[in-house]
Image (spheres, rainbow, N blue to C red):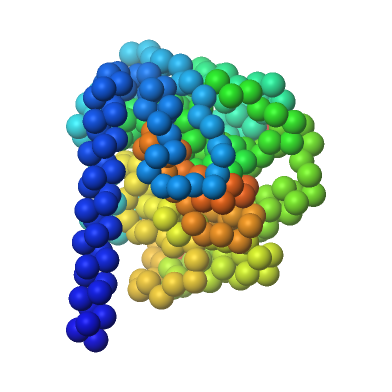
Length: 345
Ligand SMILES: [Co+2]
């Protein structure tokens, strides 16, 4: 046992040391390249050095950060990037009152409005940068702040994750190609609260395997949502998602969790999207996201590119994700990011 412990400890130390070296090297590259965070193209050029990926995904240039007019109420991190550290490390799960849930309802409905708006922009030839611009303007038109903008330094207003990009893709100048699948992750801040949701869209016509992946991921999210209610173990969510992934032979990404959400973007609880034995039950007033990610080849392995955001499947297989923000109520659950057609027209 002790020997095992030693081996594990040595491995952990080696890993930490390697990571430190990699991070130092990255810092050095960034410093050489100039530290203009508004134009991360240079660091993106060195994208693949951290791991030996078999994923040939290429990053395209990112345009300068867009501005938000003064009348839009901004989250604290938008003004001061020092404050943008997520507070997910706390372990207190906030239980919201009915009034607080009412207060955050509009942010959630705005997020779903924007998600549908964003999906309508998807077509072959459009760049994710152009989709981001249109979404950014639409957020401002309805009076919301696009939460990703400036969050931990993220440079754009949505995440656009195309094909083998797992999540956190930065909108850039790559034009979408016929048959591309894309996750658009939309979060907005309004009335002091964040709302968060995402969905898959297709540029043109998808092949049958892409449709199968997308449908299974959506089904997994919906099944996971359907079991939510008071006193249900939080780990049932992972079980439901795992069942669908196993049935279809898809890999589940373990590095990214659903999360509590409210006045802050990411707070406890962690919601694991794979079979797990994490403790805890759902209680009325909990508000969190469920956002499973499935990989087509069955791999769970992912890596982050040197832009420190874009996450890819290690083997280049395609990835899909859906997300909703839900509230646990006295007698079940409510999807707060449900789309209401025409609501903000
Ligand atoms: Co989320």
